[in-house]
Length: 239
Ligand SMILES: C[S@@+](CC[C@H](N)C(=O)[O-])C[C@H]1O[C@@H](n2cnc3c(N)ncnc32)[C@H](O)[C@@H]1O
Image (cartoon, protein in one colour):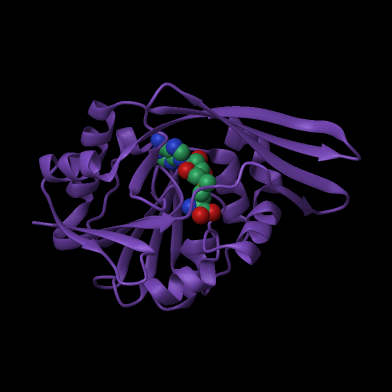
């Protein structure tokens, strides 16, 4: 995805600004809240990006594999590795996921899928743009889990398209979101310096009700455990 290739070098600074303002991208908080829901010690993080959550989990004693389809994001992740951390990174697309391990827990945090908690309901936002790819990818996740393993997906609030986030040296990050029909979002990310555009990249996302995702999870062989009490994570367990 060209978007992540371009944004990789700015990603952590932007995520830190988000983390300071809302529950998304707060990796320390996510690690601490995840602990009671993680099954076992061997974790796969899908769409690990620049590796922040994978590394925090490893610091907490877990053995972690992070995978992502963007080599540029993974290069940032690898630059943070130290010999004491039990983390490996792999460049793969979830649609072709094939790793030589079986995990006890798989975490999808702000990545290929995320749950959005709107006032009325829960929606799922996905980088995969059709139902077949979603079900097939969930089957791939199931195949990477040990029996009794868990799949955990994060829940966040809707993004605020009006927000201008200042970061780095005189840089501003902002997002425009256009809804295309009922189920698609055209999201444009921009970085400006002194009001001059440095980067403008758009990405498409598929958005649909949680109930549809639950059907896909069941089709792929997961049993749904549900929303955890702080509504930060959604948990599906492998049958
Ligand atoms: C918003 S970033 C989140 C990164 C990280 N989880 C975090 O919280 O900082 C979304 C990540 O999902 C990855 N991604 C998107 N589609 C993917 C796919 N089909 N397979 C694997 N990774 C994907 C992107 O490359 C990107 O690194």
